[in-house]
Image (cartoon, rainbow, N blue to C red; front, side):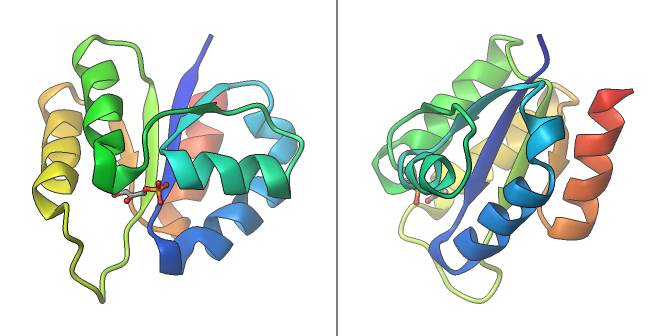
Length: 122
Ligand SMILES: O=C(CO)COP(=O)(O)O
């Protein structure tokens, strides 16, 4: 089954929830994983089942990166906050890097997330 990670920084969580609501039918056909707070908010805001990892600052980005390294993920939607520094910036860079190492589809804004979610359906 297609497996997709959904992650958003705090300022971008409302955008991700709205995106998930809009694409809920499509997302339901995927296995979903998320960092801790993002996963909680997704399950509160939609009827989607989401496997939750640790919160990002506590290692959640690295846990998702490790799934990529193991070949378990088909795509990542990661709505980063481009305007605020994050304390776990090295973990974020590691996740982005491992996506490129394994050629895993990665969307870091809503416009590309639309393509990713639709593209994986094909
Ligand atoms: O910090 C994050 C990604 O870098 C997201 O973590 P949360 O989903 O726990 O807020």
